[in-house]
Length: 259
Ligand SMILES: Nc1ncnc2c1ncn2[C@@H]1O[C@H](COP(=O)(O)OP(=O)(O)OP(=O)(O)O)[C@@H](O)[C@H]1O
Ligand SMILES: [Mg+2]
Image 1: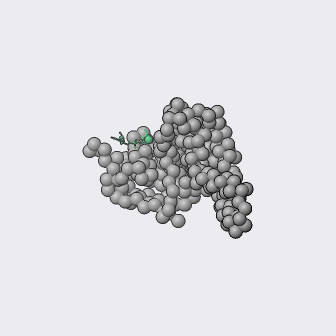
Image 2: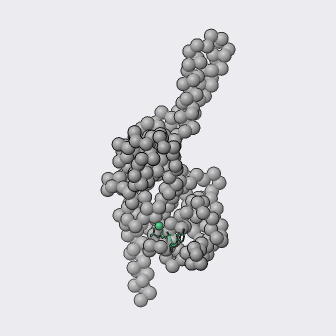
Image 3: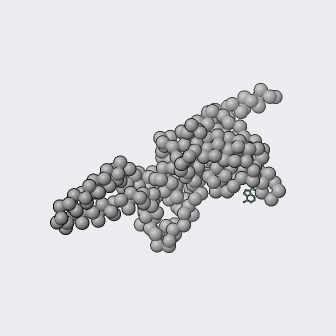
C-alpha cells in the first residue's frame, strides 16, 4: 500500500530549479532515509511531502485519511501554557472524554430518578469503553515514556514559550510522537538531542507502527533506523533498498564499475 506518491515535482527558488520531474513513492511501514549533499533540496522536498508548500509543477497524492506529522511544525502556544500541557494536547479528545466521565459520575451520585440514572449509566459505560479502547488509562505512562526518552521530563512545569529553541524542538518532537501520525516526516531529528536521546529515538522509530521518512546526516542513526535510502543529488533521486552502510557500499561499487 502506497502512503504517499510524488509525480514529476518541480520546485524553483529565485530562478534556480532545486529539482524538476522528481518522482518517488513511500510505502506503508517504509523506513526511508532521505540523504544528499547540503543544499540538494532535501528540506524543500520534505516540506512538499508534508503539504507545507505546493510544488511549482507535478502532483503529490497521500493515502486517504493519512495523518502526517512533520517535525518543523512546532505549534505556537499561549505564553502561560506549561510544557506538560503542550504534550497533553496530543490527547485532547481523550481528555474531553475524561471530563465528561467525571461530570457523569457527579450526576449519577445525585440522580434519584431510576430511568434517568439508567441513561446516565449507559452513557458512562459507552464512554468508558471508548476511553479504554483508545488508551485513556495509559496517557500518563505514554507521556512519561517519551519525556524520559527524550530527556525533557525536567521541563514539564516550565512555560513552553520560555524554553530555548533546542528544547522547543525536543518538546515538538515528543508531541508528534505522542500523536502517532501515519506518516512521520522528520528533518534532522537528532540535531538537538544528546547521545542517550538519539539512541532512544532510534529504537522508538524501529518499533513505530506507522511509516517514517527522515533526513539525517548521522550515518549511525540512519543505519539503526532506515531500510531504504533515497539519495537526492543534482535534482535527481535514486532509491536503494538497504541501510546507509549498504548504500555507501553499493554506490562505491557503482562508481568503481563505471570507472
Ligand atoms: N525559501 C527559500 N528561498 C530561496 N531559496 C531557497 C529557499 N529554501 C531553499 N532554498 C534553496 O534551495 C536549495 C535547496 O535547499 P534545501 O534547504 O532544500 O537543501 P537541503 O538538502 O535541505 O540542505 P541541508 O542538508 O543543508 O539542510 C538551496 O540552494 C537553498 O538555498
Ligand atoms: Mg535541510
